[in-house]
Amino acid sequence: MEAAAACAELIRQADGLLVTAGAGIGVDSGLPDFRGPQGFWGAYPALGRARIGFEQIANPAAFAARPALAWGFYGHRLNLYRRTVPHAGFAILRRIGDGLPQGAFVFTSNVDGQFQKAGFAAERIVECHGSIHHLQCLDACHDGIWPADDYRPQVDDEQCLLRSDFPRCPHCRAIARPNILMFGDCGWLAGRTDAQETRLRDWLREVDRLVVIEIGAGTNIPTVRMLGERSRGRLIRINPSEPQLPPGRGVSLAAGGLVALRAIAGCLE
Image 1 (cartoon, rainbow, N blue to C red):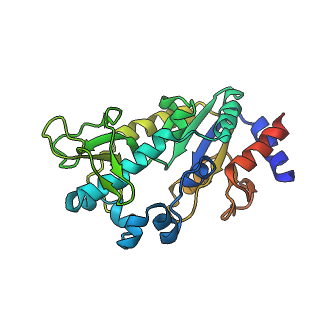
Image 2 (cartoon, rainbow, N blue to C red):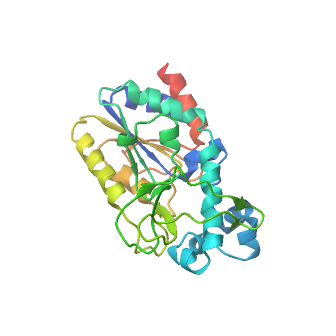
């Protein structure tokens, strides 16, 4: 693959790797990417039967109006992400980063914690939309964010309803919600993500020859794509359906994440 060889050359010239990843990187691990209402309802048929879209359930208003349904959705996702094994492409990215003087940093819109699970250092990850593995008070009685490690939701997957107890705020005992930036969300506590972004800015100042590898980031919510395009480094864009790249910025591969990363790894070897 000629494009993969060009990507390998960009990596050889770099001293630091910034991995930018959207939902598409998880497809090879078996995770849904919620592309379009039919894709979302295929993953959550109970919400499809009720004609409830992703924007409606991934919304703090859903926790106030129908908390068992909202936590049925997020509880299912939490359980799914906990049992999912990151695909081999994550290990390829780690090896690439380990071979560069300044190592690697990750910027992702995913809330699933897969990069941490794959062995990337937590202090070198930005989760720009937050993390399902952390909680905050739904009533915002305080600005604390705490791990969800001890919460084990029991979910009726057929009905998308939580059957166990709700997670509770340790201060006021109100229902807790995931520390995730949702649609129509004025109450998301961004302190954890703000600290992550500060560490990223500090790291970027140490990098002279940056290469960005972007995987599975679409244009519907373009946060991840925009970061790569604004960066001063060379950009490798991996996307099977939206591989377009600004002229002169780097190399694009119209392929899935795992296939493309394996091709690049083969050229590096």
